[in-house]
Image 1: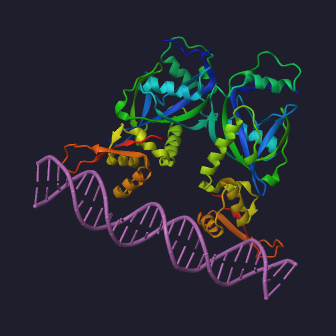
Image 2: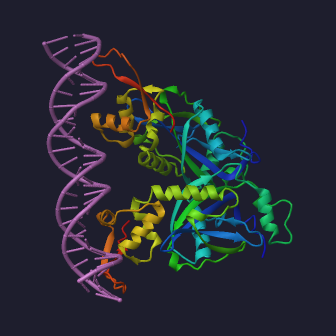
Image 3: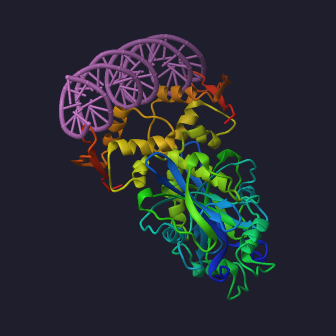
Length: 235
Length: 235
DNA sequence: CCAAAAGTGTTTTTCCTACACCCATGT
DNA sequence: ACATGGGTGTAGGAAAAACACTTTTGG
């Protein structure tokens, strides 16, 4: 395995992605742990010389999650000086590569574009990449200390997600194709971290006119069978 | 005057700023016209190697408007391939510099971070910069055709401004220190492009609890004197 | 028949809108 | 006095929240 090639990527530009998933109970994000370091970071990457920014992020997500057609939203670009930590970057590389040169484009200053993704938790088998040892889900309310400014980025992503939740019913992207109203409400509550009124929630969601109702699901519980819904996409 | 130095700035990274002002009647933005070309563009610039992104934008704004402490908001980063037009860039440079080399960092691919600024129109004496011949105010509803993807950027900035108007009472940044309720309403109407109800607008603004009322202004008009207000900053 | 969850209906409250009224000021 | 613009009060309606009732299912 070799170091990423400086001629292939745009220097000084990176992206970091906050990948949200919903376990059925809690809102989670995907975090990488670097090999032999105990250090955690957001999955991120670089932009190829002739590749649109959005596409670079999609490509990275596809490599990590195996998923295509992921809901992606750009939320902020981070360009402070404090975020740059060449010595940390060096240690990460040295843990994996025997020969790390004195100078390298990865040790220079980076500006990073932050994206968040909403994906169906059940469809993902997280894949470690070249730099990371493992990649796994963590509760958003129990995120470990992350490298660089990544804790700050996660916080900003969460804020953005919360304030834009209602527009376009973002939360459906966290669920399978078909879901019950209860599941949708649970996603909502996990993101906003507050209980919603069941009856009013149902009314509000249906009033948006973008949900389609399907046949009932006989779950085997000792209670009335719930309808299934799907997202009636015309966005 | 010489070409910008490649060692001083981060390659591939630019910013573009949409600078909003309020004339008393209409919402306006600052546009540059390049010397001897008839081409219009947004004021923008580059980031120095050891300069925070936000600071680079502030610096550019200070150069163009003479103003410090400007309200600035980052809204989107543009990274498509179509936005890159090296031939256009070349023509701009050739109109000003006798010797333009075949290869130059300005002809390479750029990713641009979009910011918008809200400033007090009455305080500004726009200053042309090294590349531009003139800089002036244009009505947002009569923006000429702009270079690169700048029309798109303006549109995105406007959308962002409109949807975030209410949070933190953004519009006060377009007015002098002290202003009447009528003036505030006019700003609001200019941005949203729709009339507001006078009584309800007043109630809504005051209910935010961030306006401070001062003594009345005796304007000399044949009518009741309005209160003056200022922004009670604790944001 | 009971408990639990789901669907729907009803009441209450809150908020927004439109309108009206009164006040201050210059002509 | 009156025209003009500014400040505030209030009735009506729409939307949201709280609550209640009914239905379906397994035990």
